[in-house]
Amino acid sequence: EPEKISQHLVEANLAGHDSHGVIQIPGYTDAHAEGLIAPGTGFTRERETAATALVDGHWGFGHRLAHEAITLGIDKAHRCGISAVGAYRCYHVGHLGAYVRRVAEAGMVGIIAVNDGGGGQRVAPYGGIAGRLSTNPLAVGLPTGTAAPFILDISTSIVAEGQVRLKRVRGEPMPLGWMIDALGQATTDPEDFFRTTGSLLPLGGSVGHKGYGLGLTVDVLAGILGRAGHSRREIPPYNNGLFIVVVDIGRFLPLEEFTAEVRNLIAHI
Image (cartoon, rainbow, N blue to C red; front, side, top):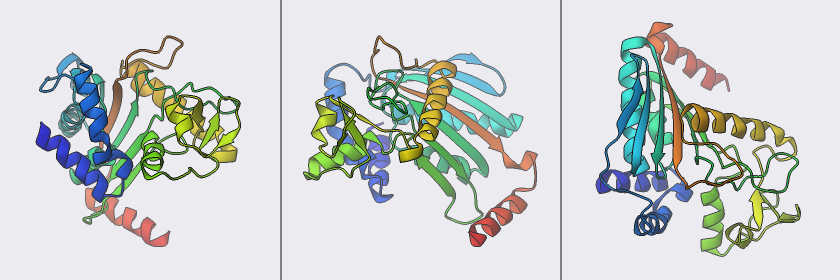
């Protein structure tokens, strides 16, 4: 388990996701010391059909649960053509691109949505000033027939929380447009986030209703369908909730045709 987590963190740095790399280690050790992580814990399948599963992570490390949930989703999609897997009660899963990359390498389309179970309400809704949602990331991976699959890995907030953490560690101000303070005024001081007097804005800037809508959708998929819990007045303990969909491309058209068309699209763009 430590090797898998270490590999995931280092790969995040190598991929340019410093916000989800080794900078996370102090937070993990603090969470373990507080009893928020149960290392070595296996998951159990609470509900299951041929194409679906709901998985309880029993508060283990999120990286392990996410990899096992992705494996389960791939296996079920091989058999059924499409699968959906929800997972909950696990700690931080790290950057999502690593998981959908595995799906793409299996010749399938992978979609994953992740929330904080209602425990990380640091993103203001569009037009509001107080945190109500998590950064609620979303990722998609699909094969291209090359060594470089198409990977979309984004937060539905203007930036991930880890980007603010990086600015703080580096002693740098944030760009305008990332955050507002408790009065709704723009702030560039990352300390406002850690004083909990400020909130991140939704993805989209002046059209932030789009990021807000996506964030709300992720909260429903990962928090309600995936059973991790949704944002609410009584803030629960932090846990990552996952909702994973895997699609077997071969059920729609030959994989080689799909990847050729994707490469044509990319070349055109």
